[in-house]
Image (tube, rainbow, N blue to C red; front, side, top):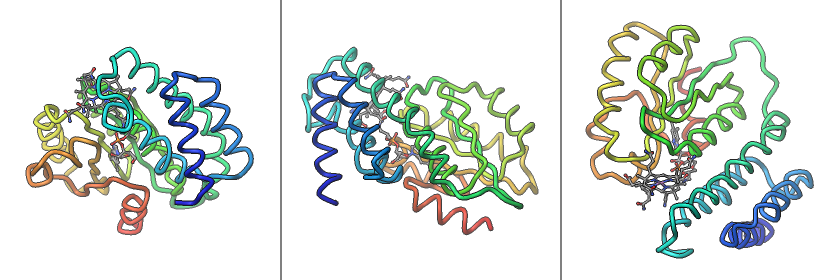
Length: 220
Ligand code: B12
């Protein structure tokens, strides 16, 4: 990792640990405005790992839930203020632009990975919409019918939502017969649950910006 990114990562982690929102957000603003970091590096090297470390061993194992809420709120603000830079770094949209929707299953409140995924799709030139966390089945299906996207991206974090995911994909696939629409699934539950990929019948699994780039190439 680049030395200046490593330094920014350490300072951001420190601010997050101290629940110091002004310092954390100022660090991100300065790095983005100064052109010292790209959105892909910011999300992949700094914001994502900082959240992953919240309840694992980099910080305190016994962190309380209210602290986790404050820290994830700081990261959500960092994502929101990054959006002007996402727009500045995306390619010009043109003819044949692909479209995508991103959402989390009903009862799934972990939304930060899905939001990052939406910005990655925007950076790849997709017309991308983040529908939300906790998206009821009916709303997901309705958005697909109205927006007719090329890609449906579903983010799943809690492993106990995998059965719900399986059922929703089966329902969507029966609706999507002969359609150009493909389904992509990603998130912590896919990455960390043994055999999850064997049980979910989707067109693609993905984790990173590069995975999405490869999917875009497969669609074009
Ligand atoms: C932040 C957080 C929360 C926040 C969420 C805030 C928000 N608005 O999103 C809050 C406090 C609300 C929360 C609540 C809960 N949480 Co929580 N949470 C976390 C934490 C600390 C970080 C998760 C995160 O945002 N990671 C960063 C993102 C960027 O990573 P990511 O989601 O994996 O996304 C990346 C990729 O996977 C990819 N991606 C994600 N989705 C998709 C989709 C597609 C299509 C693609 C292509 C890519 C992609 O993009 C990202 C870029 O790399 C983790 C701990 C950890 N170590 O991960 C626990 C964790 C996920 N939570 C957990 C649990 C159990 C809960 C609670 C049940 C209990 C609790 N602690 O309060 C509730 C459940 C709420 C619910 N019903 O959903 C467990 C889940 C275990 C499991 N697998 O079932 C974890 C792992 C903690 C633990 N070690 O036990 N949580």
